Image 1 (cartoon, rainbow, N blue to C red):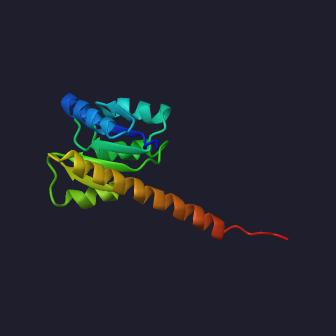
Image 2 (cartoon, rainbow, N blue to C red):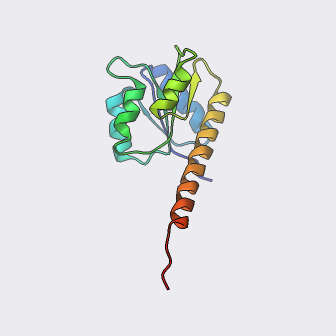
Length: 140
């Protein structure tokens, strides 16, 4: 079974490297980026099924990044943050992320968030196809 292609974005090289290794061991193909510019290029040239993105960057925020890539990608996204505050969960959801994973986290908790995001996105796609089918008129 081919697993979904993930894009991991974090400014910390060690975090990106560790997540890539751990997620690939679990069978996920993983692309990585260390900044928003590189991530934007990857999402333009590669089909990404799920984005895992740190939300703190010097040049822009992860929430601004999601606004940017929504112009050419509708991949679901999980936010990561080492400085998450209680209000951040609502803010990241309003920005378009499905969830927020607070660092430090275990790979098991991240994988649960990944699975939840992919199931949620799959249900969203199925629902939109169902709505299209319900709106289709058959002429005889």
